[in-house]
Amino acid sequence: MRVFKFGGASVKDAEGIKNVYDVLQKVGYEDVLLVVSAMGKTTNALETVIKNYFDKSAELNSSVQEVKKYHNQILMDLFEEEKHEVFTAVNNQFSDLEYFLAHNKSPNYNFVYDQIVSYGELISTTILSHFMSFMGIKTQWLDVRNFIKTDATYRDAEVDWELTQKNIAKNVKRKILNITQGFLGSDENNFTTTLGREGSDYTAAIFAYCLNAESVTIWKDVPGVMNADPRYFENASLLNQISYREAIELAFYGATVIHPKTLQPLQKKEIPLFVKSFINPLLPGTRVAKGADLEPYLPCFIVKRNQLLISLSSIDFSFIMEEHISEIFALFHQFKIKVNLIQNSAISFSVCVEDKFENFKDLNAILSKKFKVDFDENVTLYTIRHFNDKAAQTVEKNKVVLLKQVSRETMQIITKES
Ligand code: ASP
Ligand code: MG
Picture 1 (tube, helix red, strand yellow):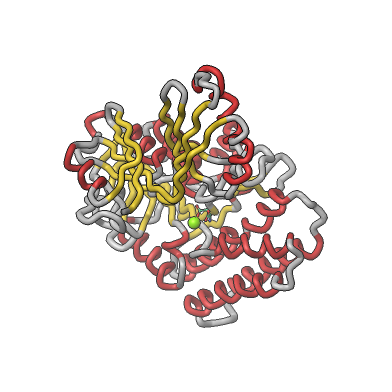
Picture 2 (picture 1 turned 90 degrees about the horizontal axis):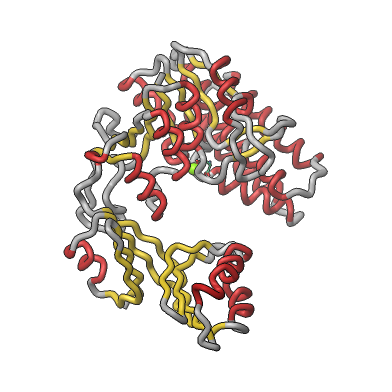
């Protein structure tokens, strides 16, 4: 069996869905499981619905209508004939969502989030599977919540592998096209859970692992895994093959093509992962598989913007590493600030962090009582795997370098645009 994952961008409109059909025609669809995300930016739109719900905003209804309108347009473009049963099926899902909004009693934000956001994937797969049947492909729609069982950590659920394995082995049919939702699971009480934003790649890997699949393919709007983001670097080139290890390293440093959790289950069973273009599906793309010989020979560039470089020095000359490090890290953790790089000297300590939730001001108030705190906002962290002089020069050109750290395979440079 092969597992294919189509993300939101690949099914953002009727054209995209027709293109999925074309891809399947070209690469085959028998014995395939499709894992599909919510269409386009639907997950973000549903996050707005959730926010409006909790804010008791007057916009709640209109934000739901917007999601409805968007999907309705896609349905009209795909089916023309409004009598097709898919219209009722999708309508019923919106009714379920509205019923939940009207009757829910739980004040638990994360729980409510998962119950609402899941409609994105439920609706996208409903539309897709009806369309594939309509085009003559024998299709089975699977509710992923009957397969992937998780704990009750809403928005970041942990997979129960034993139960999941059992469900998948028993109930996924071979020889036809199976279509299911990415990102979702369910807990012991059958409430919907999610695996974390962008989690659909991980869903594909979970199914592949449990099915002993022959491969996983992630279909993207880029030709495969590139050695740099073409938006920021001229001459970005495709990596033909890379090892699982390299892929994990790239994902860890912030390359966004593959969700970091995806690789572990695949690597355990040595299931190859392909990243391919849904525009040119017959091109080879990138193959991620076992073996050191697959290391890329090209330097790989990863850029993280909007970082904060903080330097802390002890006021009383006490040693930072021995006496304060665990306390400092506990604070970063408490304020949900993600540390991306560390450098220390005897009495000072620098960290490059990401302050997604804008908590640094509060943290700084606490830190400043004990340490001398200096910081630069809005810096950029460049990571170069397999660096060489030329690669470093490319990054440093026309920029002020604030900090540089080099290990055997990896160079990290923090810059401020000048
Ligand atoms: N739809 C979810 C998200 O946008 C999951 C995914 O796309 O992988 O985060
Ligand atoms: Mg998405």
